Image (cartoon, rainbow, N blue to C red; front, side, top):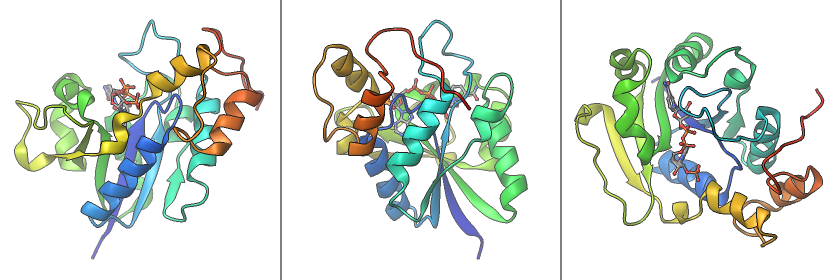
Length: 202
Ligand code: NAP
């Protein structure tokens, strides 16, 4: 039987406990063998928003997932030049992982726009899509193939990256919303205090 691999796609700016609980819940509900977190590089629909440098977002994801042997973090999108398109990542993962079943996990808010993504029609043949919803949000987006998309409500997704960033900017705590190592990383690199971010030296 082929391995069932979750691909957790997101900006992770920063990664928080909601993302980790979501990955764990999806893993249990869909009997996944592992979950690969794929922080985005440059995104087609993110022009105009100040996103922390990819290397910081990648390293925070590594810190957050370090204790789980079935979670890993991929540099696939942050190292690929140009825009990050999910179709390119799914094709690359299929190529490198061989005979696997892929489950692309992301925020349910993102899925209604999926029909506008690059090569949208091919996406369904490469992976099953799982939208993680916050409590109280509508479940099934309209217009998407029912057998290609599943929704899963994750109460811990009441935590959001936006709220974490706003809290840091306002000098409020983010302890217990994100893993301790991520709190320390954000403090050490002075992330989210203002709109400008320091670069990470490679
Ligand atoms: P986003 O706008 O940063 O996030 C939208 C919502 O979804 C937010 O509420 C966010 O919560 C939540 N979310 C994002 N990733 C999540 C995850 N893995 N698990 C649970 N909730 C999640 O979304 P984005 O990061 O730009 O895009 C998400 C994924 O879709 C990425 O992998 C991206 O590459 C892909 N995408 C592809 C295309 C394309 O191929 N053309 C276009 C757009 C997006 P938090 O802010 O708390 O995370």
